Every structure is written in structure tokens, then in C-alpha cells.
Image (cartoon, rainbow, N blue to C red; front, side, top):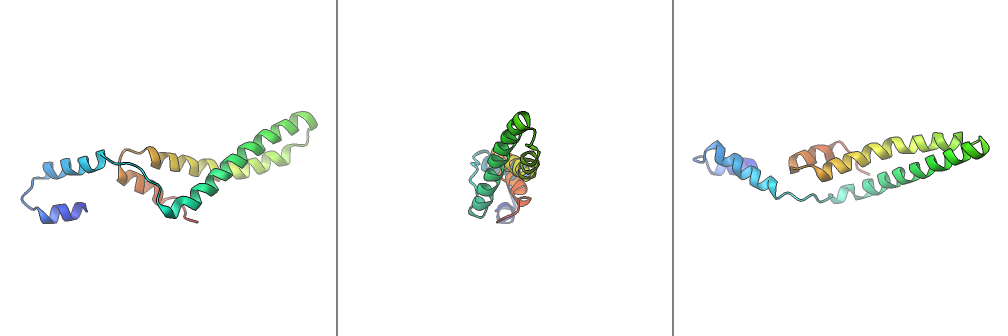
Length: 110
């Protein structure tokens, strides 16, 4: 889109082109692409179940001293859950569509 603007209007100064690009990105509203819907659901479930297992593991560890398996499973679920949840939040709250697309490119699709 930006290349078309540059190719079609050769007589426009680079400052005007930059202003047009900034206007385009100023009205940017994030919308999760359809290919990431499953990934978002899985990542959210990993995060939620990881937190629940962490709480359960701490409670069992305090009460019965046998909650270490819950804690290990919680850590296994929380590592990807937290990482990709943060990535989705970064993409959601980024100020430009280019930055959001760069972040989403690093997230695997399911």
C-alpha cells in the first residue's frame, strides 16, 4: 500500500508521504486475524490452567507436602502460556499496525 502511494505520486515530497503514513497508522485499531484465533484460545487456556495448577500445587505443598508434581506441571504450562499471552498483549496495545504485524509474525499458528 505504501509502495503504491510512492509509485503513483512521484511529485509528492517525502514529508507528505510520511504524514500520510502516520495518518494511516494513527487510526489503527487492532483486530486479531482469524488464523490466530485457535492459538489465542490455546495460549489463554495454558495460562489459566497453569495459574490454577500453581495455586493448587502451593496449597497441596503447604497442607500435605506432596504438591511438587502440580508445581512442575504448572511451570510447564505457564512458560509458553505467559510468553505468548504477553506477545498477544504487546500486539494488541502496539501503536502501529507494522509493529503489531511484526509481533504476530513470531507467534506460531495452530
